[in-house]
Length: 281
Image 1 (cartoon, rainbow, N blue to C red):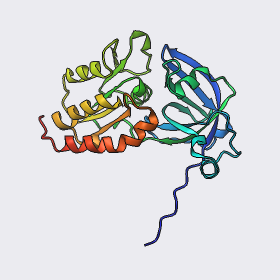
Image 2: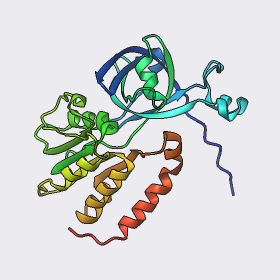
Image 3: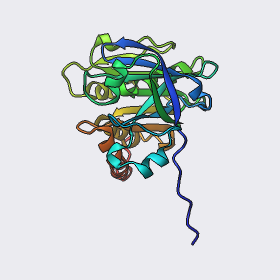
């Protein structure tokens, strides 16, 4: 049997911070640019994502930045850490990439970086990836998620064709976390308060008066409520898998490293459980 060649890590892009903006108490926008993004390109997806590479404290990496060389020459604890974020906007003529970060004080890695980074600083990133774009042939659209999914939901709403029917539900901590989105859809903002994440979102989607016709849905956010919404859509409503973009961006009690390590197994188990359940629609 012929062995497949080792898969090389794509060449990272080197981006420079152009400007930053606090959109709400817990959402920070960082606009990246520079000639290092000259080869960055996107397709028509609205859920494009990039993997930001955060170097270990006190470690200097060789130039040009090469992940294969770093993995070969540096101990694992000195490898850059990746954090995955949705592309809010890409302006190819300006080479400007906009990324919005949920910030909770000093919690986490990327959020605190976004809150303190200054124009002129640089960061390396991989990507983009992504697969979802609202299907113009669908009769109606459902978009639902928490803060982590807000950038992708906003990008999708702005990309909807004129006259498209859509229901959008976004759960945030409170009214000061709402954002203006340039679209014709009336977004339903759900204020979590002290309730568990996703509880208000589940209630709202369950209470929706279901329109007739083919649905195309985008549901992302904390893995626990995503699991329940997947059950609602796949099992109770019988929505075909190919008409759903649905996944947990994060999971309570796990950082990204832990969640990504277990995400494939989690998704496979949930899918097996729910695919075996009889549809109730």
